[in-house]
Amino acid sequence: MSKITQLIDLMQPYVDEGKLLKRNYEQLNECLEDFVFINEGNQIVACAGLRHYKDERKGEIYALAVNKKFHNTDVSSQLMEKIMKRASSLELIGIFALTKYGGRFFLRHGFIEGAISDLPLTRQTSYDHQRKSSVYLKELQAS
Image 1 (tube, rainbow, N blue to C red):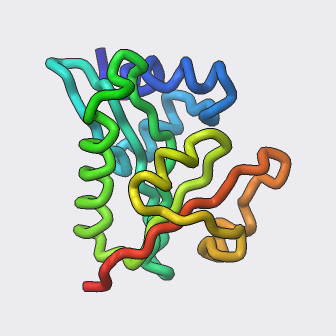
Image 2: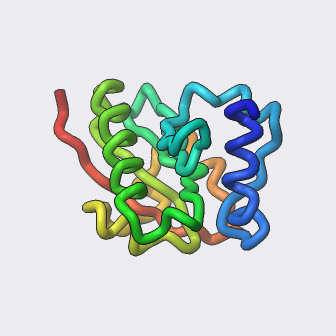
């Protein structure tokens, strides 16, 4: 099974619950390099994308999903570790996430609640006001 098919399968329960936005094969194929993965054998059990806003040196965590069988394990912490390593390699000064349901996860990992005005300008203009996602921010050490 391809990585993209595995991603779609992993995300689908969260899409069905309204927690994640639906992404099709083509959309995921275009941004596959954004993703970090946790594998168990040959199966992806957790993933997250990190979109890079170069001008602002910030990154957006998106499409974060952990297989429900792996909840309450250290898989989500491993995933956040990989995201942080990717952010560091991109020399980002901050990362953020928009979520309707995952606030505790981000707070547990040192994020703080923020406002739409804290987002990169291009992301502010594409913010979906009907979805009403909360903004979580984390400053990183500048390189």
